Length: 155
Image 1 (spheres, rainbow, N blue to C red):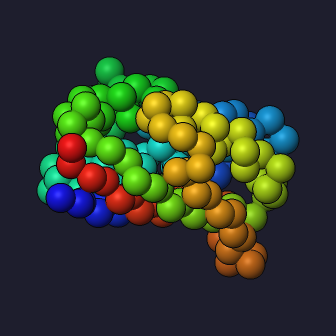
Image 2: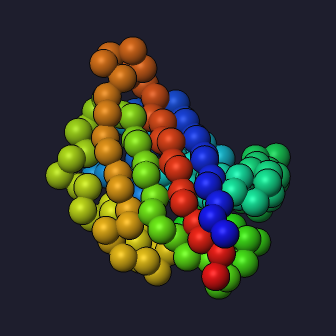
């Protein structure tokens, strides 16, 4: 049996903040995310996609921004908790298709590093993590967004 999940996340950007995507800090970014946690849009969208495949809500249900225990939380912890919630040991990820929308900086040179880190966090092969990068064409320069679809197989 197969399951498909979809997740989406976005955050405003501000100078002086850190930008994290795929659990990697983007060192050359002029702005970072305004967020309760570390604001990693890719891991947030991935976590929501995994939860949605099982109609289990979203990360806000489990990590509400009103709870100060989650302030500045590393998103790999969110992803790890989500994997526990969906009983990841009984699943096989066939593939992940992700899009990150960000005007600056360009992320193409970091594609393999981000893919490798996401694959490592999920204990899957890197060729199962597809990531594309787009810009907003100047429509949302102070904004970062990610959309993720996952195809899961119950084993």
